[in-house]
Image (cartoon, rainbow, N blue to C red; front, side):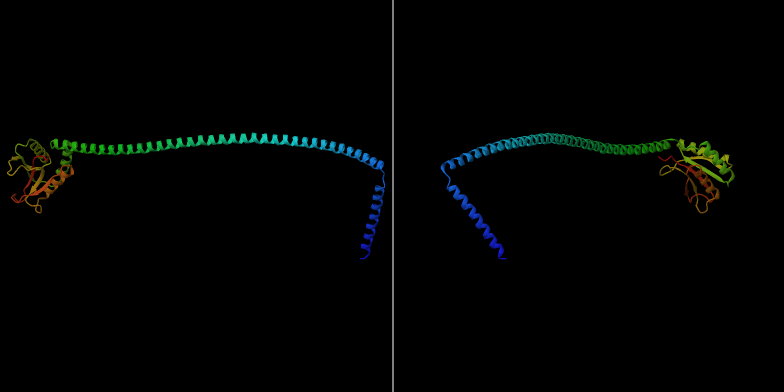
Length: 275
């Protein structure tokens, strides 16, 4: 441990001794020696200046070339970036233009759809109004036709058709028969004709009648067509057959009671035609 410091002290002493001898020689040089030393140093300095100057020129040239190449690469990249940026901006502008066109087209389509929807609603409403009006017209027409038919029926005289006559003959010929008196209103031509048709079909079926009697009625003329008996409970069976026969051919025959009639009498009354 003690040997290392001792060796270092020995080395320092040797170096100090060498430097002392060199400095002594330097101090003992003559002016000519100093001059020669300075001339040699100047040449060395000039050579070093040339070398370092050439090195500066060379390194500067290389640095400038590298910087120029880097600048060209940077400019090229910048130009490419600017070109790509221009393309991106152009594509963005085109996309915005397309988006605006699409938005305008969509707005127009929506507007047309709304117009079409409104037209469809209006058309449907108009159709419903037309259908409602048509239904009303149909109902009015049906009512008018029914009224016309009813008017025609009322205007047509009461008659027994050939078919009805045939059916009456078939019913009345084979059923129970009896004596019937037929009465109508004096001066009523339509009722008198209808009464004669009834009288004729009864006689053709084998029934006994008193013929058609025309009379005047106090309190107003009777209206309609019916059968009269003294009492519904004690009416002759053929009275019921007669009434049902006329019902079966579509000529309703009303029924009425008259206590003034004799027991077993059956009358057919043809009054004025109902309005």
